[in-house]
Length: 203
Image 1 (tube, rainbow, N blue to C red):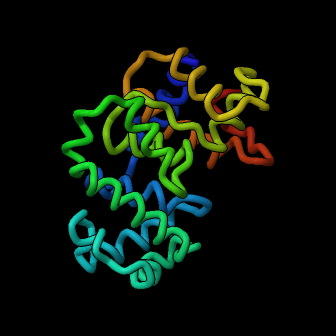
Image 2: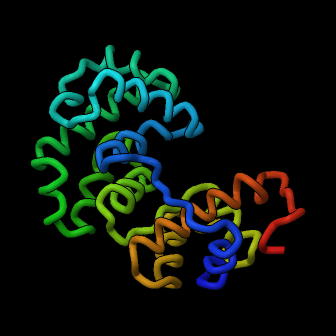
């Protein structure tokens, strides 16, 4: 696993993911990116920024119907508006991001997973990229690449893949974040559903 990380790192260089200016933007993006491309998320976040709503105290007060219109470029806007507001209300109740930094990772993960619309990938994205906790994010690209590279069978559930990657790599949030981003990069450029192997660094 570490060898795979090093190969991808040498080939692609630093990815500097997640593309957000603040931890709150990471949280917003983690919900909006569900079942859609990042391009739509960028437009939705830009709308929120233009309206000066990327502050917890402001965003949490927006009505769901209005929020759905603002984030429409991300798709499924009514569902995502409700999910995002539920998550933001939880964050507000917990005292904001600064207070979360004092809580154990396992406790935060359990609370996030208990929120409607927050699955393991969304929860772990928030933990890793917004709170810098050493929790690996497993996405579709991760499963596809690790299976094709012979490191997974392909039928493991989310938790088994996450734990396996975390055990195989040094326990550092920066490394987990970079490895996840590198796998996304490889999945987009080469390891597609129909592989494009020419120029792949793993060939």
